[in-house]
Image (cartoon, rainbow, N blue to C red; front, side, top):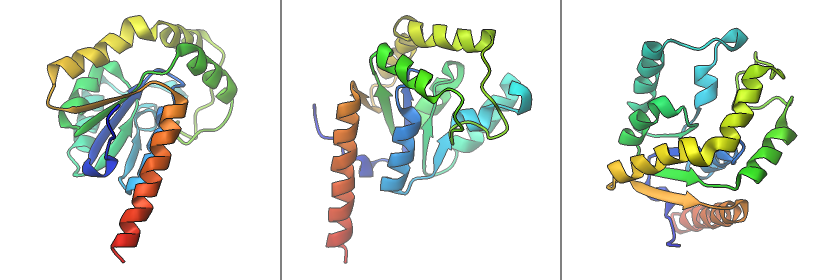
Length: 185
């Protein structure tokens, strides 16, 4: 796998299955690169799990991606192409769905920075659909991501297939940041 110089990019989207580590990676990259971070679920969900209209959601994302620099995590497959067209880099976390499932179960009921503070997770039909979406990711949402890669071959596209690889890359990028700051002193 070729080395990825994360510092070359100013507009990054991170996509992958539920529980794949998108929010974790986004927070770490924002710290390493100083790029502003956007969690789509924080922007999307209204009180009582209300959704914006499609028009409101597209307008809100258009405003987000019009900025010069950002890292955005989240799939929201129906509007993913909008973000992909504006991105310099697409990072795809293609993590085993069993690992994703365990991660989602471990975080259930915990407050997270990638979700609005005013929402509480519930064990209801929507949550069961969430699990179904996680399990069916390889057949449903992964093809959407791969189709975007084919449609926009000029976009840098990087696949991370394991948590170990993600941590290795994060350590490399942290080291490079330290090297860069040392050489500029």
